[in-house]
Length: 186
Image (cartoon, rainbow, N blue to C red; front, side, top):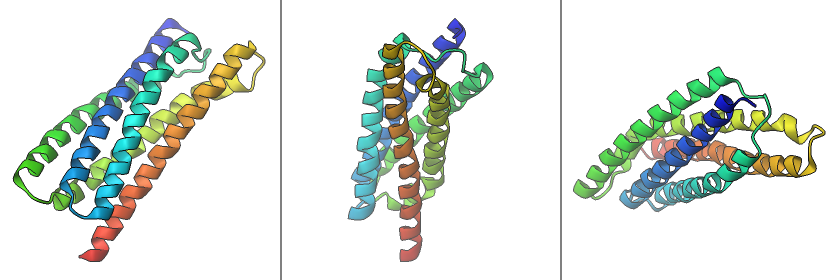
């Protein structure tokens, strides 16, 4: 793999770690500020899992550095993803500030979270796309004849990235269920 591709991939991993950290904070604030126990529990679950994603990506970075995909990255897509992640980080930070200020002034921020559900769902959908791209970069390696240590490392990377991607899909489904629950109660 080219050095640009390897560096770009590691940059995406760093950016996703940062985004997952901010999402963990955002969902934690939402969980704290929402008085409905079911919706709060969903937000807390997503917060905890986002923090775990940050941890897994932190742990994976040295392994990815040691075991990068070989010539399977689309550099243009990688650059585009970086822009999308930067935008998501910026929006997440502003949502954290917004929700944090709402928590400090209101007893219950459920309506504020409802107003932001579409944005939260979009973050989860974007994350699925990013993790899917990273997975596609590794899948050819797991089925080819390469050094067994490299193949085993690649399989671990794929399994962990897939578990994160599956979580992100589930987060999106949970947020849609929250939306339906709130609409049903109106």
